[in-house]
Image (cartoon, rainbow, N blue to C red; front, side):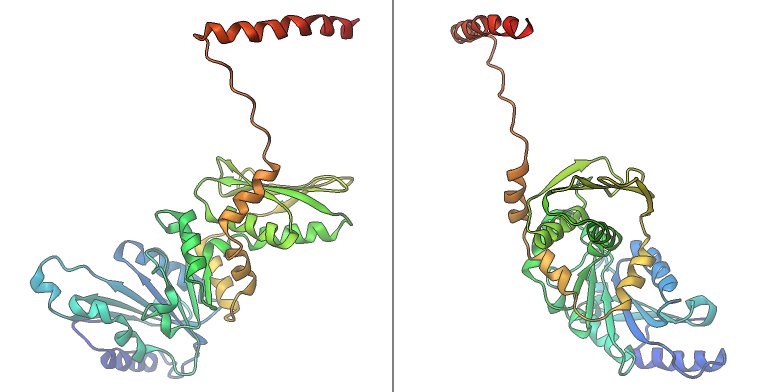
Length: 349
């Protein structure tokens, strides 16, 4: 069931929700939380689709806030709110309200959202794109217990991690962190199978993927060892190698679907480690609404510390060849080579 409301108010939207529930025969509200999605028109469809799939596990009232950009000064001076109320089969197992804000009301989205929140229910705000620098100080973020961003969607994903660390507030989380949950579980399980001491590690993944940095910082913080970040062609995370006192432990996933776990002295094992879609990531974040202390610790570890400790295990660079035109420098290098030749022959004998 869909109801379109043009130039409306929050009270009229609430009234449409009540009438809609009565029309479909479910007057009671069975939602467990309010999910507020702040996005643009381009990404609204994908974000709402993911939220509807996640609502099968977490029935929620989903409020999609779309801030429309007015072209002319006259339109920007006028405040208007359009809404689309979806119930029943059109909203999966929850309720959906798509809010389109025009003009001055764009700067006061919290005044539109606040009357539509479910009473005595937690609030989660999700920015699929264009997340604020400090989500907790955002007017909409201040209404929520959990604030979900995605640094992978930022223009400079790696630099975004530093900004997230500086502005971190308990309740913040990042889908780039959620993506590495299976990797963290598998690596922890692998270390539980052997009695060893980890001396160093290497995390390999595609460039400009903040999940790789987060996993490297988590490993370095937890194991207290230097971790090197390597670049691959992807997709996403491709490999983690831990050097231990009993031999290397390698978790390799070259195709983004099936991984291979190799432990010294044990047969290789195939592990299902597919890349998850956004609906699965959001569903995982909605399972726990308390602050994620592990994420906070890994995030605040610092990219600069990761780089410094990674340099300890970096291979020594080979000396560059001398320029060919310098004839004067070429003669001294030829004499030592002549002296070493007899030594090589003697070794051969």
